[in-house]
Image 1 (tube, rainbow, N blue to C red):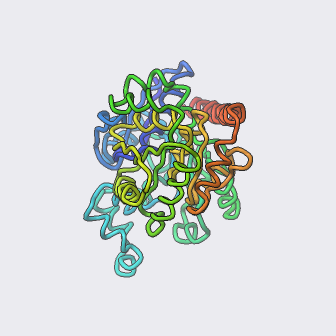
Image 2 (cartoon, rainbow, N blue to C red):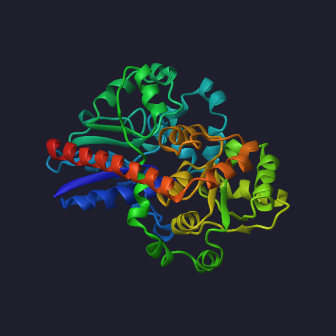
Image 3 (cartoon, rainbow, N blue to C red):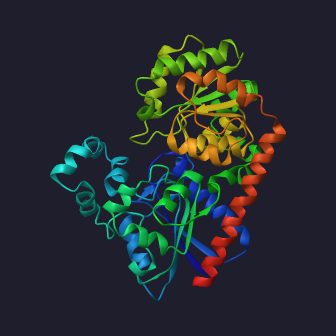
Length: 398
C-alpha cells in the first residue's frame, strides 16, 4: 500500500480547488496501484454536500508526514501555490481576517503578516505549500502538480531566499502554462509543462454522470435550453468598475448573437465573491437572464458542458469548457490568459478586455467541434504523460 497525502485549498467552496483532488484520485486510480489517499487543507472541512471531499486539518497533515515508519508521498494539488502565503490562504476562510489581509501592504509595514498568520495556524514552513522531503521525516516524495505562477517575479525569490532550492528539490514539478515556465527560467529554475490536471474531468464525469447529480432546476433548464445559452461568470475582485461594460457585452450576445443568458457563480469563497458580482450584473442587464446559485460543483460543470459558450474570468470555468469541447471566452485575468496562450485554440489564445466580449464570442462560437475536440485530445495526451511521470517518481522514491 502506498499512502498518498493530497493537500491544497479544498477546505473552502471554490470550484477549481475542489476539482483538483477529485481528478487526481480518479486518474491515479487508473494505474492499478494500491494507493491510499488522504486529503488535507488548512482546516478540517467536509464539503461533500457540494461535491467536494472531506479534508483533515494542517496538524494532522504534519503528523502524517512525520512518522518514518509509515512513509507517505505528498501531492500539492495545484493552483497558484508557488508563492502563496499563509495570510492569503487564511483570508479565504475567515471574514475578519479577510478585512485585515485587504490592507496587507500597509499591515506588513508594521508586522510580518505571513509570519503572524503562520503562528495562528501553527504552520511549520515559512510558506504553506513550499517544502521538500527533507522537512519531514516520513515523506518519501513531494509532487508539485498543475501549478501556476503567471505573477511570479524576481521579487518573490528575493523575499523568500529558500524558494528556489525547495522547488529544485521537488521530486516532480509540473506547471500549467508557458508564462510560468518563462518566469521560473528567469530565476534559474526548470519545470515540466503539462496542462491543468482538471482538464480530464469530462473523461471521469460524462454528461450522464452529471445529470444524476445536478439539482432539479439545473436539469430542467438544460433539458430545455442546451446549446442555446451563454454561461457567464465573473469574480468581484478583477471586474470592479467594469460591470456596465460586461453587462453591455452580454446584452449584445443576447440581442445580436440570439443567445440566452445564464449567470452562475464559480467562486463563492471569500475573496472571489462571484455571486455578489453577478447580482450587480443582473441589475444592469437589459436582457432577460436565468440565475443559478451554484448549489454544487456538478451544477456548474453540467451548465458549462451544455452551454453554447462560456464567458468568464475563471480559469477552471474555461478549463471545463475546454474539457467538454465547448466554445469559451476568457476575460482579462492573467493566469487565464497564460493558460489560453499555451493550450487555447488558434484565434482564441488570450483573455480579452471586457469591451471585447461580443467580438470574441463570435470568434469563439465559429470554432468547429473538430477543432475543440482536437484541442481537448492534445491536452488529454499531455496530462496523461504527466501522470505517468508522477507515478514513476512515486515508485522510484518508495
